[in-house]
Length: 279
Image 1 (cartoon, helix red, strand yellow):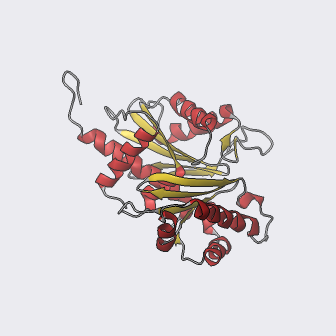
Image 2 (tube, helix red, strand yellow):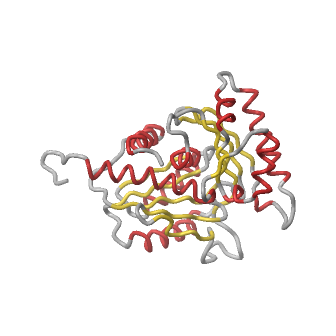
């Protein structure tokens, strides 16, 4: 787990990345969300994972469809209802003193990011933070020295490989394939090939040796696909390096988002009151 100082630095970096200033005043509660194509997970500081549900739990999208596909929100209305139910259960109806953090794919387009921010704002929190999943994963299990880190996030519909250097995205690649594309009992050849191809593409573009350093310390595997030994073992074999896993790869991203959320809340509680205003 990162130190408080590291967590605060990560939170400040997130706000700078999105061109906004953190609004810490009055925040006492919060919720971290990992909105995936297959699963949506929620985390509350001090409680851990409070929701881990299918991303269409009430059939809002109809006939087994899902409001999020291939890392994109395709039905904002049903997605908003789902997030509203989670927020109601986790935070209650009054969310005026809360902050909600949501992770998105690193290469999510501006439409997805804007839709995610709008959905969170509609839930009524005091503050919203939208950050990429690779930096959330790094907050959970990345090196404390800020060195290079390769994050491989294998989801149901999407696989991303991201090279982070000092907490910033140096390179990122995306493949619209994941574990949901595999037939039962099918070898994960396509998923593993996609990961290796993306890493090799990064290798050709790496001018400073950061990728080599990240590979030497071991890629961090996250997402539901990292729960499968046939996936992780084949990736390690093809890349010729040992891979790193957290104790629960499927929740790595939401736990990292939760750590960033916790840092924001601690910073808010420690901040001095402004003149003329209560703390």
